[in-house]
Length: 347
Image (cartoon, rainbow, N blue to C red; front, side):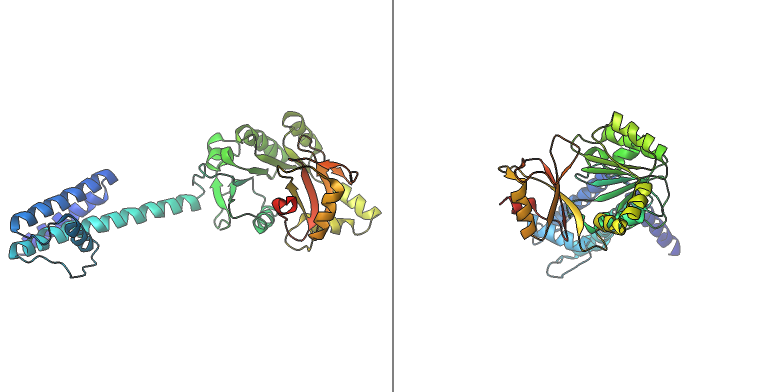
């Protein structure tokens, strides 16, 4: 008696592992075959109350899900034997296999993303941060997340392997910051903004050139350099890229001439610890308005208008004449405690 039981246990174990290793299409075909054969056996055994399409689907599903409400059950001895020997082993095994495969797929996606191997190429309007500096990148992430819209996602592409990635960002690890495959996985092709900030100017130069070649024309690409020569190369070859050059020596000299200037500049560039921060907005497709008129409107909203950057130019103009017209597409720079909605100002 023990030998047949062992053989039966091995048979069920082999069947379960075979189902677990099968493709989704094969698995659903097996489930469909099992359900159809059950319906045929019930029809032959005279289970007329369970063979109606809706009734049978409901009974089979609750049985497979192991819910077992008890409102429907076989009424004949043959139907009960079919349920015990055929329906229970097959339906429950199929259900648990589906659950196991779904959980395994979710776990695999989670594992790949945590290891930096996720694919975010399908994301739109994301912000891609290329490079990692242990001292500066975490602060940059905090600054970005403090003013990040709900529709945007921050994606970090780095060569470093991060044991504990920041939960606020999607993490992509690659041996190369210029790899087309890595940049694509990080979503550069559909990004709204790309920030390049690495440990060295040579890496920043290479990554900026590679990202600019992949990013859409509408994307805003920003890069940071310590050395002026590297910054000049980007200006020459990629004039649409916004280059940020280290202002250390200039800031020291300015603080010497105007005490406290460095604190003011630092406060205007941070959104975390300041009561007033530098923001910008693009004037919407509305009638043009004089700069002085808009300055008064912003003042009523608790903001101070500083400069205007025409849509076709890269150089902002500070304190233009009051009668200067602000056209659709022009960018306005202002100081405020919170970001303003351009549509509310235009109304």
